[in-house]
Length: 156
Image 1 (cartoon, rainbow, N blue to C red):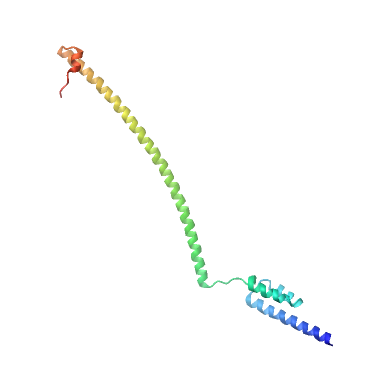
Image 2 (image 1 turned 60 degrees about the vertical axis):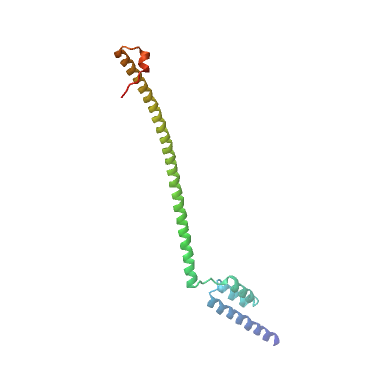
């Protein structure tokens, strides 16, 4: 009779622990609740493993409204930061293009200056030749030699 009584007490204890695991898993919304109930009914020491599982990873984390709000603020800040980085990169590309255009413009300005200097030298040479021609012409009109015409200054 003591063997039967021991078996009945063991069964009551196993099912009592299984019932406690069942109620607790439903209350705390534990993942794999059915597994824990069956395993505890078959082997009561599994209840200890269930308890450890419940404390570490069994339940899903429920955030408070304040935590959800903070999470949303952080998410928006990260999105804003990402958009700002994209805008900065775009602006840097535009600045690089402008620098390239400005460099071309500087080169073009230098080329234009060089052309103007060349034109100025050419014009000064033409004016010098024209002055010499005028001096020779004036020397002929006055009946002077060409060398004397060169020494003559034309007054304006």
